[in-house]
Image (cartoon, rainbow, N blue to C red; front, side, top):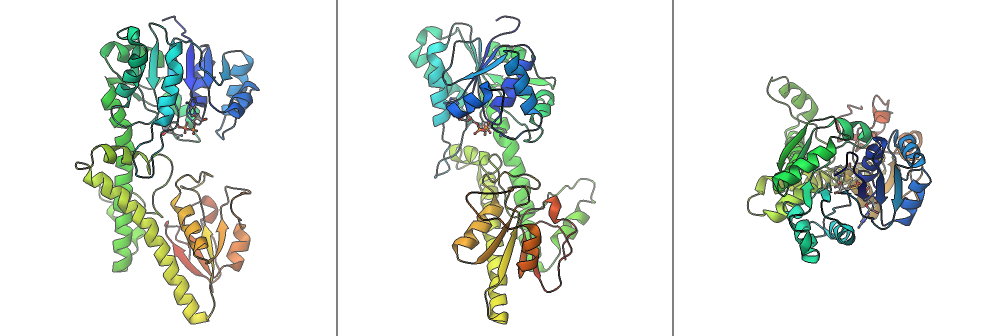
Length: 403
Ligand SMILES: NC(=O)c1ccc[n+]([C@@H]2O[C@H](COP(=O)([O-])OP(=O)(O)OC[C@H]3O[C@@H](n4cnc5c(N)ncnc54)[C@H](O)[C@@H]3O)[C@@H](O)[C@H]2O)c1
């Protein structure tokens, strides 16, 4: 492999595009591949199609310098990175169709000595499946190419910094693949590069998110218990956390996003008998959202009985976590949409989204004026310290302490 190897990046989304741009900024020639012509055209104009701080300027620079170009079909290269989606199917089984099709499309372009690294969050054993797929079609490459897995653990909003500075676990299908992959990441990562095998690296990524899910499930369960016991869960957790070795997380409306709410299922689907706690955590966090819906419906019913009319309910926050606009797998959105579907009178408030083609949004000020019941579903900064009229009823599921 040359001092500055050529690189193909399969998938130019939230992970692939920043990674491709960062590698290109180190003087390596990168060809970014995406099945979307719109994405490819946008990038070749030096522009971006996703929201991520500082990415715009970097992509513009590396495209102009000629170190990054995009295309819809792969070219031959020395290093291939794969960062395509890995969703789950309706039965919670992982859906690997994007990974398979990305691997199939690079197979004809592979030369001896190529290094192929899977970055997509994947079930344990996926790197071996990728190996099988390649050698079935190109048996002459057996022992002549290198394959590894290296998961991504960046935080959207801080991706460029974290890509460079986070430690990484890198696992090859054999020792030499691991070494080749580590040498490659040294071109653009200053965090520590930890050598392991492919299976372990795959499990590391899944376990990181399953661990967060489990800790949030504990907090969510406590919130349900404390509600029944008429204890303020926020005060109770703050006091418990005064213990030097206790650190309980915050309860909320459930768990959302495209990682924590998805990845634990990749462990459960493969190890159904063994992963009881991991499955229970997923179920607890899903149940928390249903519990929130029931709480709101009960409050609405009590209002109707007392006032002889349906209440107007403001759903405050739709995103899956505070201060972002991302609605993927969002429990707040599930609450909002379920109540609308059941014909409740809902005002949807999401200060991080200006307009939406799929749902009507109400401004924060209007909602505070018009609503009878104000339900806090996400702890956005805009909701902190709000003064709310005394005649309004409040349900706070995220510990804003609004009264
Ligand atoms: N976004 C995150 O914060 C994050 C964090 C850690 C891990 N991950 C994982 O990284 C992977 C990629 O996630 P993402 O957020 O970048 O997804 P994304 O949806 O933003 O981007 C994926 C891109 O891949 C393209 N694509 C699909 N099939 C393709 C193919 N066969 N060939 C070429 N391109 C193809 C899509 O058109 C899309 O542009 C997933 O496995 C995800 O779980 C994401």
